Image 1: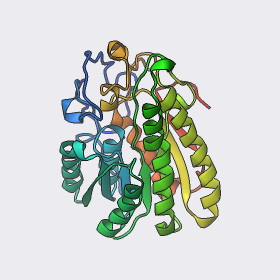
Image 2: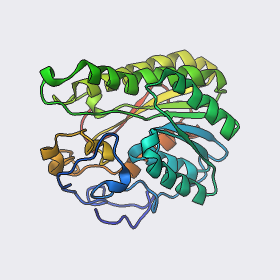
Image 3: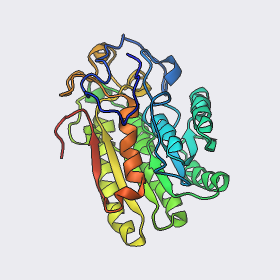
Length: 301
């Protein structure tokens, strides 16, 4: 991947902002590490420029150690927010790096390792973020599990259940724990996917959870809007993250990943982060129950 020399506010051609990568066939055990990804993804650590849009805010981000979650954490910190990072314990090395980037922006980074399939941790992560940050007004539910399976007969009940526990049950539980603490002006942003609209035949369980996240987000937004709490979602398309090489895609398809978009390339995590910044900031005060698609031009509702 070519090094990004300009920040996200610089006028540029989106087709050529990043080259169309052809990732080599590779494999990492789930959940995988950003540091071992080839080529490396751009999370905005060297390019994202903040403008003070989240000054003084306090955010909890799940799945914040790598990929889109890491890019959002970096962007939030550059915009002036303190950030609590939720991640699996085996992802500690990636999380430590993101914490360093947050602290280099003169913001506070808090590490909260744990497994969101554990019901108790879904409450603990909120309580710990509240205690460490001294409050909470942005919740980003980004953690996700994606394992490609070619045939329905090979999709085990265990995988189906674990995918739902990680991708949608955890969002319900974390939101339930967080809402009593959120004040008017707070925001919840959930990560869904283009898969909610255009499911791949190898991602039946993952795509089903992403459609559920869309629906949950729209329903919860109606419930919380009168309280001044906004709920929205972001639906990325093909974005180059470690999720893809830890069984998220069939290995033989990796070299062509993302080339079917109108831009002719996969997205980079830092290209998704501004959508979260917009939905978290006061400038989106009249945006509620929206799913913001960041997918390189693939038509979606």
